[in-house]
Length: 266
Ligand SMILES: [Zn+2]
Image (cartoon, rainbow, N blue to C red; front, side, top):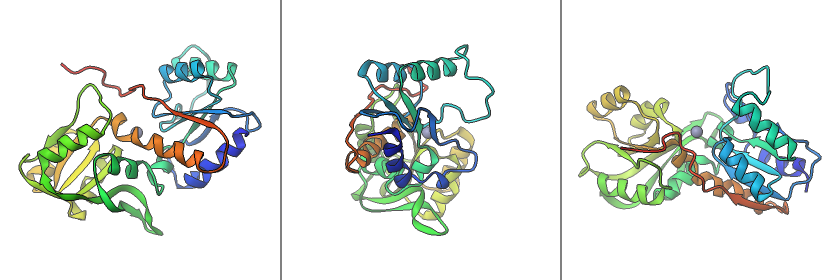
């Protein structure tokens, strides 16, 4: 299989044209004609992930977050990013990013998150595209039964991969919850949408004090703030199975290395 064959599968599942205008998705380094046998999936393009790829003999790393998001004029090995690019190119390892185009896909990042925290049945986008009600940011779904916010938080924490701190809850832990919105990664911008959706709780990452406090005080749904990396990691399995089931003959592996920015809680 060539890198171009693999890219075709991803571009069908995660069309680059659906990425946000500020985003940088697609092939970061690699030759479309090069052979691909082993594909490593990870959330972050960081040195520990590159090391894992080299140790395993990967030909391609598929990541969620872009290595370079803003303009750059140098990939010299004088920065960790330049070093990473050099290490990959020297070893014939390609790097490919599926970011906001994977967030809005169906199935996408938030579908995987929704299943991981225990939502069942149909999932609908929290913020659907005007031209496609089945694609868009976030997902809304139901728990199999009503439970307390505290019990749901425990269930979600048990389903998500472990990070240095678990989940933070805003709202009365004894309040009942059934209808849930989730959004992988930073979900600040979807607070108003979650309120309008009439859900009981919104689970996302990177929530800040003022928006969260005002949201809950104003009678909005309860909030659960998880580690950014943990909310996106469940998608890696989904991306790997899209590739495996496409008929492209490659070996896939999901990196279990925790690359959340916060490495220890005290
Ligand atoms: Zn993210």
